[in-house]
Image 1: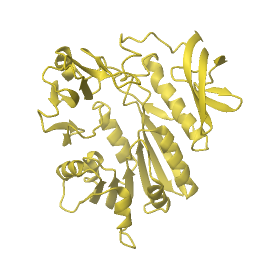
Image 2: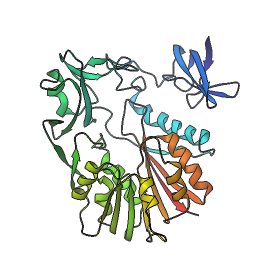
Image 3: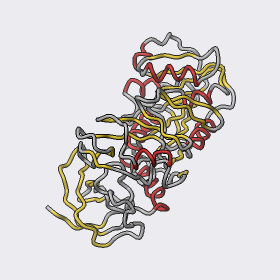
Image 4: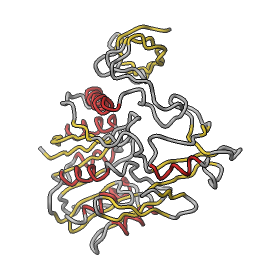
Length: 368
């Protein structure tokens, strides 16, 4: 059934006490939408028509928008995107964290030509490269992309000449594209440090904004200390900087290839490297565990597992810095930690992915 409603100040539809997520609807708009099934206390709807648009709405500047699966927020003006994402984080805390928070600060960078890491696809015809279509496994040919770093321009314009059929990871640094299968890894500079990353592994895609994220993590930590944990440490992005402040950086990362790069990035003879899931590593911790000055966690979108959340809730360190790519799981996990005696002392957002709804967050928690 198609219904007409005005979306709330957070862009959500509320009907009979039920929250309905309607992708594409902006705060204050009058829309027609079709509601879907209710799941876990909320529903998802489909936008049918915008009857009275928000002043933040614009005509998407990319002709592939709506078909390409890469961007989902391009219908919002650049200046408004960060503010609306902050509202979504605020709503996540209200809905899943069961608390009201002030509108968080958002740190932004360039809205275009920022994305240094891409996954390119070629279908079985191998004719041209592109991105996956929205809500589909089909590939859309893309010969130019306004959010891709300039180093990808030639590769995209050529139709991905030389790329194999299937998915290929690529990284652009300093005007050059590094291609999985052709290049073994990429070396880049972040805030004065040379770091190594695998082309088939994870690394933040917005290199312009990355120094600000690193600085926020460091600002939330003691200036000196004996021992710090870098959990879900990846290839040691944060660990490389933690090594300047702490005598021992303990890197825990389940991907052995990423951990091998962390050994290169985190310089110093005393640091520890554990190729393990965090749950398995926790099960092997000695009792009592070594004293800690701080903990940094950077979990995947699924957030903390119950075992990890319970261990952190027990207070193994006086300071916890939680780096999150998913406001929902951040709010959920923060609720668990705060119920056990932690206090959120600061929360800052980083608009790493303009033209999409994704947002990065850094939360500083301290023991009450």
